[in-house]
Image (tube, rainbow, N blue to C red; front, side, top):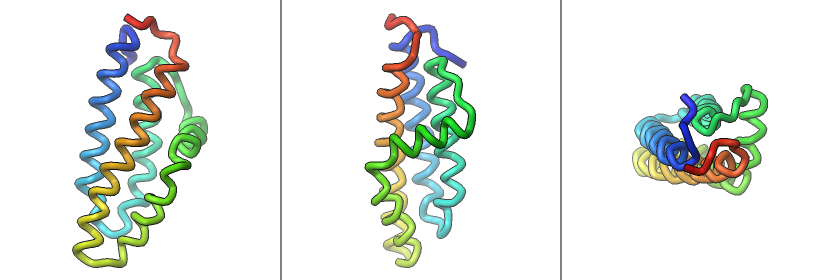
Length: 121
């Protein structure tokens, strides 16, 4: 699954992050979905790492996700609170999930691009 170089890895990782973002946005409106999305967050970290030929176990992925997502923790809390606002809050949750996932994904791509030993081109 690893890309042949960093340029290809960035393209593949962006596609993967976009797919995760759309997937999360499509289920985020469901009350309590943020609990299920946490497992998806870890899987996304591992997948993006694999694209850059960086192997991570679940513990390392969780640690990295926590570091990368720390600035976005407020939006995760807001996402939880929106569970209690029927219809409008649920719709907003989808937009928040899309934005947060995209932001975290882009940070992961930058991180793995820096630490990957793949050639640039």
